[in-house]
Amino acid sequence: MDVNEEFWNCDLEDLKRGYVEKQELYLCVLCGHTVEKGLIYPEQELLLEAEKYMKYHITKEHTSVFHHLISYNKKLTGLTDTQSQMLRYFYEGKSDEEIKTEMGAGSTSTIRNHRFVLKEKERQARMAVTLFDLLKEKDHHAPSVLVPHQTATMVDERYNVTKEESHKMLKKYFDEETNKLKYFPAKEKQKLVVLREIATLFTPKQQYSEKEVNEIIKRIYDDFVTLRRYLIAYGFLDRKKDGSSYWVKSTS
DNA sequence: ACACTTCTATTGAATTCGCG
DNA sequence: CGCGAATTCAATAGAAGTGT
Image (cartoon, rainbow, N blue to C red; front, side):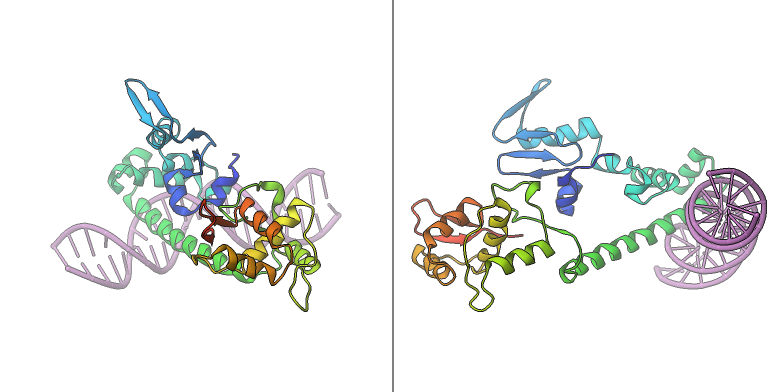
């Protein structure tokens, strides 16, 4: 029953699809199987391009995302065995009458009621997702980990930081009066938090010249060259090859 | 009149409580 | 901890309600 990190972090659309697109590869969130972009995968008589092959992989190994997810236990799905079985029948497009016969129930009203209860459950699930999503923005005490910049490079699980930790670090490295960076941290984890904070000084989607970038960084730290380089290296900023234009990598 | 949705009552199973 | 009592939960079936 091990469900990987990506599974929980990817958005609903990716989850429904069953795989996420990374820089250089496609990753199956159901099993962690990866497929490298740009390669061609032979399958029987056919040669499949990477993404096609990933779709094929899901059908072959997991039948469908639906089948895979519904096979998880109650703890994960929140569904009882009969409820899961019901969903399977519904997925197959069976009528109440057919389901009744197949599961040997005495009456179609039982199936009807299952449909009703499950629909209610769906509404509750939507409600819960929305509620918790809204809560996330407000609850600064939750020990939730900050998800690193999605485009950030040089980041792995070790650098997960709770909001509390991150708050502490920021207090340590930034002067409360002037908001200037006192000194640049040596530890990777701290660097990440500090850089993330600095990245917020830039307006998303806006294009900056190198000079403008320097100006902004200079306001909080003298050694703007180092900081600028770090922002790029850690994937917070991106730039044209010739350095004529800089912008914040999108966060969403 | 008909199909379809929602509510209610009953039952048995599972879980929790509380007492020694 | 063990065991029966009490409570809660899930499944069922039929009744009531709703809309066309």
